[in-house]
Amino acid sequence: EPEVTQTPSHQVTQMGQEVILRCVPISNHLYFYWYRQILGQKVEFLVSFYNNEISEKSEIFDDQFSVERPDGSNFTLKIRSTKLEDSAMYFCASSGQGGTEAFFGQGTRLTVV
Amino acid sequence: GQQLNQSPQSMFIQEGEDVSMNCTSSSIFNTWLWYKQDPGEGPVLLIALYKAGELTSNGRLTAQFGITRKDSFLNISASIPSDVGIYFCAGQRGNRDDKIIFGKGTRLHILP
Image 1: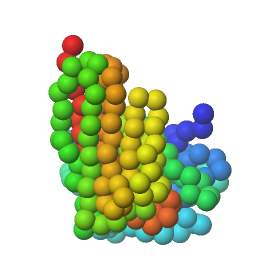
Image 2: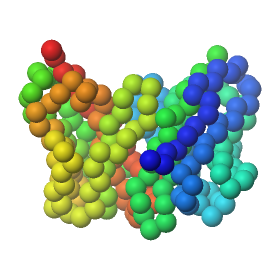
Image 3: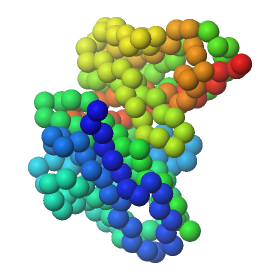
Image 4: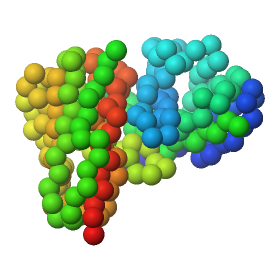
């Protein structure tokens, strides 16, 4: 069964450092998303990406965040200067043309120290 | 903001019991989704609902899209130990590629 894969599974970084979270969406999907989940809380939307551009972003997705699809398979989330409050699980998701349901990856646990 | 109010927050039940949880919103949703999340994993879609009034089953799970499009419930019949986890309701206001808005989750515990 096709799946969304995310790497790394766990990343520890020092405050102020840049991190890049990587995702390989399902191969024929066209819509890509990042969500985050602070420990013990609900899953929150960050950004959606379609046709090589951001289609929507939340208020969480400020200038410190950026997304990129550098090639035909990867979808990345970059946080330029991490803060302690960026510590969370980050989930990538993708969905296909015509409105198939979004599939989520296993997540990357980001710990900022 | 777009809030989904999910209840209960947590449930403690005996194995074999039926479970019911629900979600309400002040806004209309075009799609209602129910996900399960196990510890350290991503949300896994259980049931998707696309039409007001729709009742859909997936094994022991049954979910309904409320007629007002502002609520949904999920029932689990004859619970088993592997049902333990967090269940999230979620919705989409636009098309199926729209962002997903999640509720705060219902944590299900099953007593031996």
